[in-house]
Amino acid sequence: MKWYDMSEEERIKNVYSKYTIKYFWNWWCSGENKVMEVRIKDYNLIKQTAEKFDISYSRSGVYVWNHIMLKNVIAFVREKATVWFGINPRKKNWNPYTGYKSFGGLDPNIEEIGFLFCDIDRIEKQDVASQEDLKNCDILIDKILEALSKEGWNKNYVKICSGNGVQLIIKLDFPIKLPDVEFINKDKIFLFGKEFEEMRDLIRSGMGYEIKKFSLKFRDELNVDLDKSGFNIGRVGALPVTKNFKYNTFKWRGIIDLKDGVNEGLSDYILSKLDDIKTFKEKNVFFKSKSLLPGDRIKPGKFFEHELVRYMLKAHLPYGEINNKLWFQLKCLVRDSGFEINNRDYLKFKALMEKKLNGKLSPNFPDKRFNFNGDIINSFCINSRHPPMYKLWSTRKQMDFGLNYEWNLIYLVNGAIKLESNTTIQEDLKHCQNLLKEGNTRTNNNIVAMFIKGLIKKYGEKDTKYFFKYLFERGLTYK
Image (cartoon, rainbow, N blue to C red; front, top):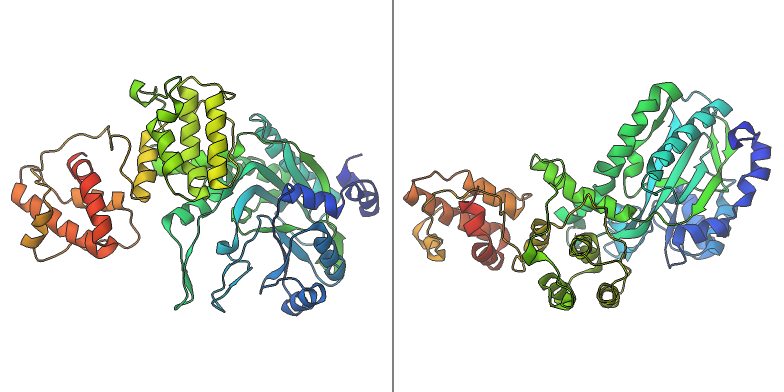
């Protein structure tokens, strides 16, 4: 008998009871030190719970870091209110209300992206879900899992009955670290940089978009829908072994199924969508497949002499930035250079990087659909203000703008080009380039001089001199 054909009493006895709070916790944290938010809407209950167990709390919930704490909190609150749990682990960050670091329910408090979350519910919600409603939610979940199985990404997940729907939480093979967010204590505000915004939108506009589009094919047939807000990084889900109070009654929440294998390659695929989305904005949906140039290859016996390998070992960069961008490209390069995954030099390099970063790196090679791309390495170098390793924008055509590229030109003009505050340097270069006309040398050089002064106002003189030295010639002359 399927779980949704059982009465709730039978379901609790024969299905939910197989998965204890400790079992769920160990699956969620993967044996590592993680902090879970237990989301509670009632602030008075939040304070009561925190004071009773002497644990951290915020305006949105309380925070636990082992299964015993989670069990105690559940036992205390589940008869009083509906509660949820933070899908992704939490961390302390600056509190905009107090100016001190604490746990919280905001996006800057998300430590990492560790899961894909799919929340399936009925379209029409007049009363508690029927067995037929739960069956249809479960069918859509199984269709999603079947699609993921083609890549072997159905080996680690938990399926939870939320009371009136079904939720699927798919674990990534390696968590994706989120970059730090700048906090201005004086104004009590966060400044979200472009990299954080891209990472925050990574699931929603990447794999989340694909899953949502896939689910719409079955919407009318099953009369159920996937909530796309589930792809937000700060999303909360139904906490097992609690009650969902709704429609003047309650329904128990419980785990239906749990698999604890490895979804190998899932994290790399999700990260690749970051580059695909950037390319899509430049009117290309995917990176074109291309062969590795002979000069780019890592030569046998000279692994540690390669420029990218030496750069990664030498550069002082945060774990999240290397793991999320450079590591994926390095693995493409190693694979396309003809190395096996068990190559001694590759494994030694991986171990050295993990020691340097104090974090884990996925060893598996990316799918062959993804190729090494020097432009991505260059983009990383530019953002880090390091000299680009590869020829910039190699496919562009050279224009005849008659530019002199002399820094002292700035002393010959009075004005400065006003630049938008939320654009990248690449977008700024394109804006300046669009103002240039072939054969109009004097005017073009005046425009470039005013552009330099605009960059100084926006980025400062140090960064502008970096752009001038490494980006100007190809960024302005080649179109």
